[in-house]
Image 1 (cartoon, rainbow, N blue to C red):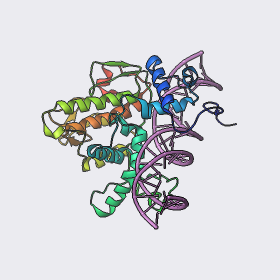
Image 2: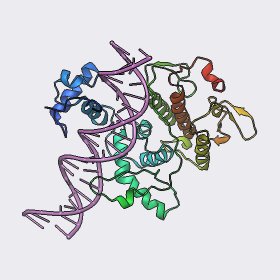
Image 3: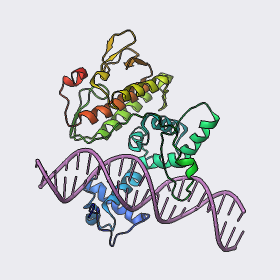
Image 4: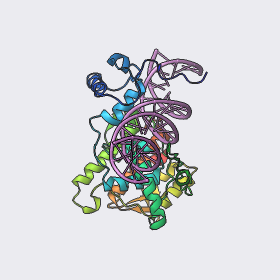
Length: 299
DNA sequence: AAGTTAGACAACCGCGATTCG
DNA sequence: TCGAATCGCGGTTGTCTAACT
């Protein structure tokens, strides 16, 4: 009964990968590309589960993996993103080029969780851990872990796979992207953000850091107040003066979201990322039409 | 020096979502 | 339309190693 195992475990290697296994996997993927993980071990001659191969590749062997310690900037970004997204490690990782969800998850569990817990008591940062009830395996320090702070609302987005996505606004607006998933959209968007940052002469936009302020919290509240999902009208915003602002069109230096002013470019871009995730979720199998997508209100 | 404990992180597991035949 | 296959995610466990007793 129950779910069929992804593969027969008999005769398969488990535990840490050897250098030889890594080499075989790298060679195979370089030649044949990723995908078909189930068949990969057999074809490559690896005594490993397909899932294991995928994980090893994604978390360790990929050439674009960034090695080395998490920088202070990255740490700050993780904290902020976690505050917004909760334990959505893949989404968080999507905004940290070269970092994997597993790495960030581990980093959070081993470093930031404790750190922030300390900060909660000693500083006014008021960074909360989103009710994450992570159980430590060996240490069973349940007293420090399973006492979720009052869960604050997080922006629950959802990554979905899309076979055809037309991306308005935040990426290359004219670009039609075939066979990319939402994750790719996020990555591209993140890359765009970073590239823009790099090119920007203004110090305000340096690096990955961005300032979230009270408007964010209000924003998430507002978003969540719509039954946890963005409403179509949310995309067509009204600024403080009651003027409509198309969220896909930068209004000079300012963009208005939910009546909140976002003057920081990086903040904007990130916000757009999040919106895109949500849009993709809600509209994933409802491909945008060329003009329709610019008129989000019509959706 | 030997044994124990704790930290770090790689790897595994189960499940939901999506794709495909 | 349906069910199996596949993928991707988040939570959990296992292993290695450094620090401590």
